[in-house]
Image 1 (cartoon, rainbow, N blue to C red):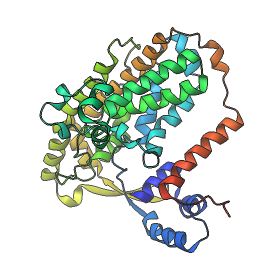
Image 2: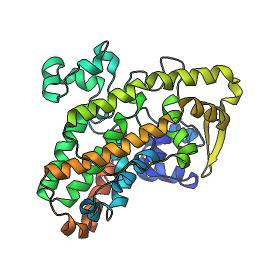
Image 3: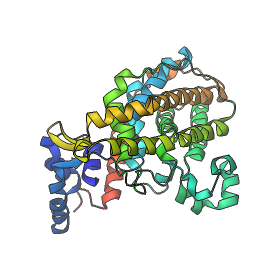
Length: 357
């Protein structure tokens, strides 16, 4: 799983696997060489399960991209110009979640930690929640509905300052957390079916099914509208996602009982790398039972992202974004961003840079 995450992060192809890991992570030292050879056998056959908590990279990127087209013309003049940035960087929170302290809890909330009817009893606002439970408890059990509110405020301020670079970075991150809040398996401790004998269901629901059926999805969600109750909207997304959790787990268990174990999985070749994943026959049966549930949650994500971006702009006084459309990330900014992304992995693996003496 760890090796697969590395490859996803770097977007490596099979003929780049050894070179990529060695170039990015492996200084020529004995201790790190042993790490290299430990990872190497994993580079040929991977189990198609992303690290828990990731709505597939493709889905996150698709959600941010589609949200742009629901914005009014006054915003599209800027957002369309930078749609590739918003798309590509939609996955930054996942890339840094294992390297930045405090990042991981922003992606989920374990509702069971707070007892029955928790989603209707928990404080809507962060300060109230801290007073009641303390920051350590909140961080332990996830903070996604509060993280959405925080990033909404950050984006509003970026619009007020007319800071193009900041607008893009925060908008991309906000879109990610909103999408995570709409995933049923982000609302439970049993996020990967590990407590019900359904290990791998997380990637099955959020990655495998969109890969197979996204072309059938109707992703037109209409125009963005102003959201007056930000906190309530964030919590409503989590509640609706959690309400779908029972179906996610129960239907997978039903299909597993109906099919022979040897028909549940298959091996697929992707860019020369062999992956073990759920078979198309199993996926089709599960997809039919869910009755387009993944599509509904993706649509809800796109609509919510567009509504929140629009609301931030309105709350900032509807600044003219036309002059910002010409914003271009110069080479120094690009180098800074790439250096930051590499630092996430360096902190994750605690290895020194190649050029360190």
